[in-house]
Image (cartoon, rainbow, N blue to C red):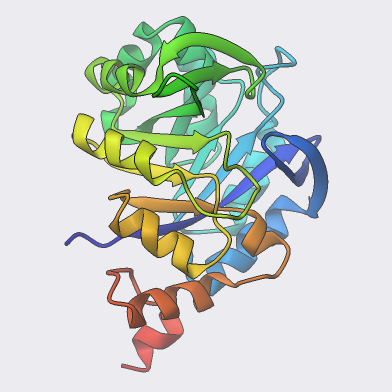
Length: 260
């Protein structure tokens, strides 16, 4: 089994990390540069920086904050929010990101994904999908920071995004986001059956068992989490040590690795 990744997420608004529940009721969680450095020290495999109001406010990403984070950490940095053109993405990559994430702009123009993959390689292009369960079954795609329903089926859109050139998907369950009661396993199982690229699961981490479940039963390639790390419920190191004890293939924290 391939190594699974643990990815803290920095949802940024006005230069500060925030975290809410189901995309609302946001509260301050700290400085993005300091948090990113802390998570790197704890053994995070990557960090994602998402400017969560850029698309809704029709503005560009906070590039100065991206640059400050990139200058501080050496693990891969994924960046998303308000990226609407290949030039926007190039600026973020020049600022130090390794991956760019597009959500609203990709839905509005799937050709953007193709152009970005041609310019930077599919491995650098992540399509983010915010999905909410439908009463009739399946999941609907939302854009503009979860504010606008599209009527699109999330699994169907995931397949089209991969065909367009996405090398990875970052999929957030809006129903589970910030609730800390577990991921939507059915959503990730459906995606694992449908697409050949890695899927990052987001929304619902309350503890190690939730992360184990989405990586194993949900067959996600990576688990993204925010609340449990930002507010001190768990450290990345503690999660990884526990997952390894449960037999989940994750890269050990550096200190454990050096200890043999």
